[in-house]
Image (tube, rainbow, N blue to C red):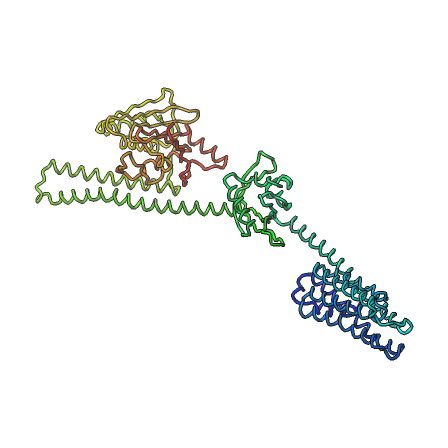
Length: 600
């Protein structure tokens, strides 16, 4: 064993570097080099023994022993160049020349050496090359034909068998050794091929069973020809169900063109990557079906020959988590843009809402300070004082609205529930705004249910809700219009609605109703005075009570805003707290709890 290992290492060192990474090709090179190198060296080593026993050799014997150098030269040629087929052709040519020379001098076609012409194509078969086998067969047939022709023409010299018995024995021994080398090489190649086949099979089986990515092979029409076992985990379906067009049937209808286009481009030689949705069936069967995002990278299958590739190999992996992150980033970006727009809208609105009353206060107060120069009478002073008071009141309302909205968003707004009759509050709010409605030429109509019970809520917040809703209705309803205030009980909730036949709200603006500083545009695209906080405050106060707000509107026909409040917000708060949901006294930081409906 200690002697064989250095010999193997030396043979391995003779393998050309270009094939050392390919186990099967390297084994073929070793099988070519080893028997020629070792066989020739052994034969040359016994040459002195042969001389001692035989005496002075003849010219033919010298030529035979000289030929033993040729296999060594072919082995060196292969080791230096790595040209396997060329080395085999040189070996076949040299062997044919040796057999021809021996047969020519030992009786021609009937010589004992002529039979070894059969060895020439057999040796070439180890190359696994049709070109080499054909060339070796041509060499052998040409040599046999030449011997036959020369024998027919009488060109073969006479051979005395008694004088060449030693040469015949040497020929047989050399042929046996050579055949042994070929057999050992063939056995080594067969063993290595078998081992490599099973090693590759085990390796691919290990990868296919343990990798989470799915490997598929597709025909020229996109049909699945092979699917790795990981598909059962990824798609929730048996491998057999995904064969042919089973996978295509599970691709989302909207993504099927992209899926087929990627496979078609890959079949033409391109490498493509595409993302699409695929139906996955859960453990509960068809009752738990979902669509997952899959990334597929496909390329043409490696094929030999001049024909263009028609089959495609693809690798698929689940990218649903990455897609969810991308969507979260997109939502965050959109939210950031909305916040930036809200900031811009806030600054623009505040610059108007604060500047206008401040200008009025400063202007009329300066006139009162300089009343001697302006010669202002008592009636004008009262008028200017009233305007200053109105501007200050308006300014205070703007600041209070901003502060209330800020408190609700930060969670600092505290409501104080108490029992009260909602009808009295609604009537009081209508009385407060009755004069303003008459001046605008509007009719206020109340339709309150007779059996309306008392509610437990923040009375001040409820009053502010009603005032904001009525003020909005008056502001956006033209002269001659009607405003209907209705209230009734719906199970354990109080429903109050304010409906007008004013300018209405467009479908594009409906989703933004209730956002801070947002004002819907009228039919004539005219902005109304105000901060745009009215409905936002209403929504926040309703949410703090555990209720919700609904908006129905149609442009040019009017708007109906309904609020749904629990009859007892304290009991509702306790039940929500036990269930782990948001308590009604916490802020509603997201504006997605308002139910927006278009009128039918």
